Image 1 (cartoon, rainbow, N blue to C red):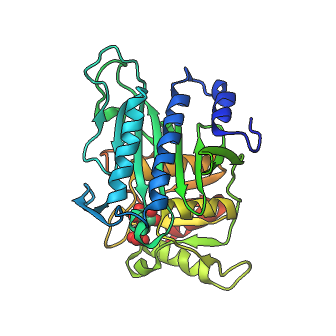
Image 2 (image 1 turned 45 degrees about the vertical axis):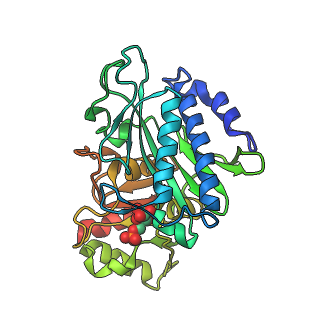
Length: 334
Ligand code: P6P
């Protein structure tokens, strides 16, 4: 159920009963993400004005320079979710290992674990290009009241109970699903309230936008090269338009609204691609499928992939269903 201009808070309350597990914990968890998104949004929007731009001097487990806003966003989301006493564990792109919450308190009944990319595309911050936060929520699989283990995090994407992203763009939006469709909420910064602006978001069945870093073309598998050449061929509604921002959340969001496909394939430089399965590909795949789209690694449905480690990477092809199917056809026939 959704009513345009409903606030996020009203939407959560109205739809709480539709979530089969709810004891209000998931609603409170989404609310804590909402608060953290507003805090990070404030810093992202003023990044150009204060000395928070540039490297924090550290690198994360990926070996990538940690931008100061990465660190700030990571700390903000972790602190906000921890203080609300809702989750029992958090894994983040910016943390080498998962964080056990309340593991000393046998009385805690927290059931959810969250995996998060606190500020995806952060290398774009210094050049004022949109960035995003991506989150994925599961119910724990180990007994409530005990410390979480890695098993609580290494769950297939098809076990997610919720997933979403925040895009800090020309406007700031929170887009999420609990398995009952995808809804987008736009922040009114004047009053700090998210309003339902994009109810029931759906990928168009087809589209004419393809998003891939063509600078890596010579390193791609033959099937991907063949599909890119197909996109560029003059025939029917092709050539398509190439749009690649270098920010997954922004490319995904535009393609979901206009129709399109995003690809980060494996290459001779990156045997598993670049994107991480647990806190980038799985949540975006959940959203895509809930919005009538599709997401695979070129051969296997993303949400059916059995995870083996926290920061593992997978090739990622996601977007309008018929475009992904076409790309998969080229991959199969290569
Ligand atoms: P490349 C950002 O670092 C990111 O994870 C995605 O948001 C983005 O789509 C991709 O990597 C860009 O990577 O190698 O094309 O610069």
